[in-house]
Amino acid sequence: MSVDAGERHLSPPVRRGSRDERREATLRALTAGTGARCAYCGRALPELSPRGGRPTPYCAAEPERYGSWGAKVITCAMLDEQREIWVHLYGPDQPMTRLDVGNLDERLTVVQTAVRPLLDEVAAVQEYLNQQMAATIATSDEAAAARDEANRATAEALAARDDALAKADAAVAAAEADRAAREEADAQVEQARIAAEAAVAGQREAEAARDQAQRERQQALDQVTSAQRQVADLQQTLNSERVATVDRIAHLQAERAAAEQALRTELTAEYENRLTAQADAFAATERALRQEADTRIDKLTGDLAAATRTFADELGRLHTDKATLAGDLARQTSAAGEAELRHRRLEAGLADALQRAGDLDALRHHIARLVEKPTVQG
Image 1 (spheres, one colour):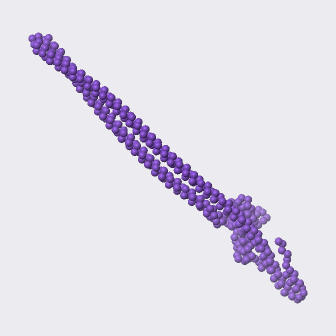
Image 2 (spheres, helix red, strand yellow):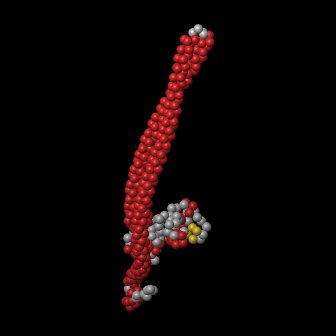
Image 3 (tube, rainbow, N blue to C red):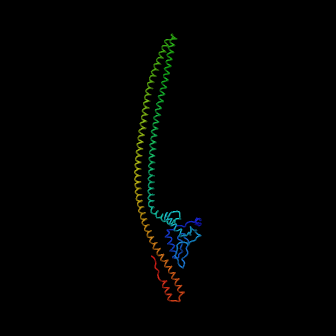
């Protein structure tokens, strides 16, 4: 088995239609004498010989072109038959031969024409969804602005609370000042007590000056009494201020806590109500859009299925008509070839008869036999 030609890795020719279509086109060109080409490789074929003969749509056998396979010379007819078997078994889109992209482009154009309305509708739905999404984002931004405003109000409330705390701290500082005054009064009492003791000691030491000492002692006792009354008044005032300050601080803290709780409750309720309303609106919009899109998609899907069925029916009818026309053309081509062969044989017989025109009866008999119409097998 020789495969020398195959080892050169020849490129297969482009597949143009089916094997029957290519053979019929080549036979028509041969009969019409319009430059027929091989139904497989596309090479130009020689015109029919004047001596007649059966026309073939393939190149003549050339052992040096493709080589041989076993005892057989590989020819275009053999390769075309093998390729047709391959396509019949494995489909037209196998890598054994290059595909005619023109036919594929025509089919893709038909499919794109049928699918184009669906693609336009899908693009419109997508654009509408984008617009709705932009509106939703804008609404969300407004909600965020409202939330920022609520946060600002909360910050102002916190600032008011801090101011109240500062005032409470000032009241505490005043109470601390009162406590310092009380301590100063206690120091004065202590000094008075020391002075009284000194007076008593002077009385004991200077009996002669007893009257003076008694007057001084009485004066000191009066001062001590006055100082004690002042200390008692200061202590009472300080206690009252302390109680009032504590009550005021507790009241301010209670008011602050109540204000914070009320503000937090109000802001939370308002924010939740807004979020709930927006979520309900978004959900309703989404359901409506989804239902509308589903309805459009179902309608377009039904239209596409109907168009596909109509296309398949028309394509089947066209294939049936093509097969019928191909059969008629093959029969007419065969009849024309036989008529051409008969005509050429008649011309050759007449020429031979004219050369032997010595016997007129024999010539008439020979012409009648040549003109006799042979029976054609249908």
